Amino acid sequence: MSWSAVDWAGALLWGFFATVVLTLVMAAAQGLGLSRMSMPFLVGSIFTPDRDRANVVGAALHFVNGWVVSLAYAVVLTASGRSSWWLGGLLGLLQGLFVLVALLPLLPSVHPRMATEDHGPTPTLQLEPPGFLGLNYGRGTPLVTLAAHAAYGALFGALYRPG
Image (cartoon, rainbow, N blue to C red; front, top):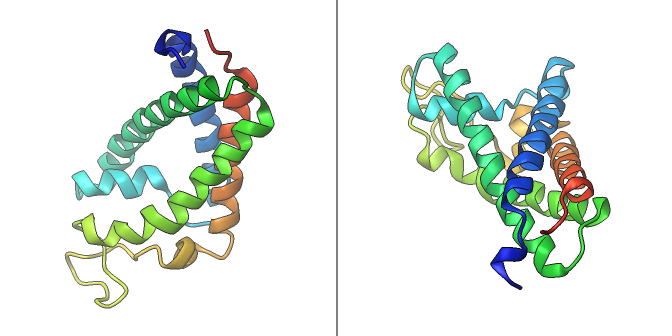
C-alpha cells in the first residue's frame, strides 16, 4: 500500500461526519434512558472538575479522537483495497468491542475523579466506574456503544474512497 493512496482529506471529512453521527446516537440513547454513559463528560472530567467545562473539553477531545480513528480506518480500508459500508461497520463493531472490553476497564486507573470497583465514591472520587462492558452505566450501554460504533464505521466505509 502506498501512503499516497490514502485520501487524508476525505478521511478527515468523513471521520468528522461519522463522529457527529456516533455522538448523536450516544446522546440520544442517554436522553432516552438507554445508557447513562457520556464519553465527552467522562473524557473531559479527566482534565477539569468543573462539570460544564468537562462537557466542552470532552466533546472537543471526542471529535479529535474521531478524526484520529478515521485516519486508522482510512489506512485499513485503503490497504484492503476496498471500502464499503459492511467492512466499515465490521471495523466499527471491533472498535466498539475494544472500547467496552479494553478502554472502559482502564478508565478508573487513569481518571483522577473516578472511583474504582474496590474503592467506592469519596468527596474527591465522585464518578462511578463503568464496570464490566460499561454495565454500571445501564444495561443498554454495551448495545448502544456497539451500535454507535458500527454506525460510525458503516458511514465511514460507505463514504470514504481511497485516493
